[in-house]
Image (tube, rainbow, N blue to C red; front, top):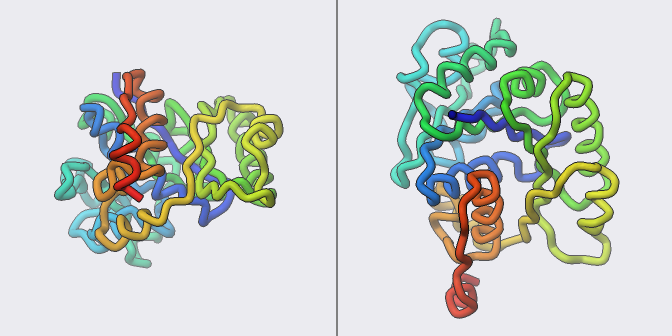
Length: 250
């Protein structure tokens, strides 16, 4: 049965969209049929990351009743299927964010395994729409006090809606003494840590190529970390590349 995973964050700039993209690409790597949708309707970035900032039909237009879901799906050259949001200000008017739940039901019929919602940061109507639509919820944060504090607020907000958080992904980890430790983050948030994504210079290469890092640099440290998380989600085995392959990925 297809599951919809909403990936959200307490604050912007923590790597939520990058994480959504690479989890989707990693699930595809394991042979799973996935659709990634940009449910961050007011500030969509999914299309920008995949080189499709402007499209004929977006998720916004679907929610406004102007188009069908199937017409808003685009296939990236990597084979990843995405539903971008609209960059047009006029497409923001009169959008009912609660319709993200209805749209989710339709999108799930078009993917065999997973739908990923790249949700909005914060605790506004967009985030609530993603929470209501989700079968599973994943929080993205950084190992910094403000980000972890906002992640905790988000978790409490989700629990108030009668839902649970599947886990947290900690991104942009540099290994500095000034960062919060993973064990400390786990103790504060009281939810599982699904994975830790190290800071990876290859991420800039992926952004410039408008693709997921798991495609552009498949043996890099971040790519391996994303694949480990995807393997957990999909309940499949992942054989990490050997040390020789990892050395040439740096």
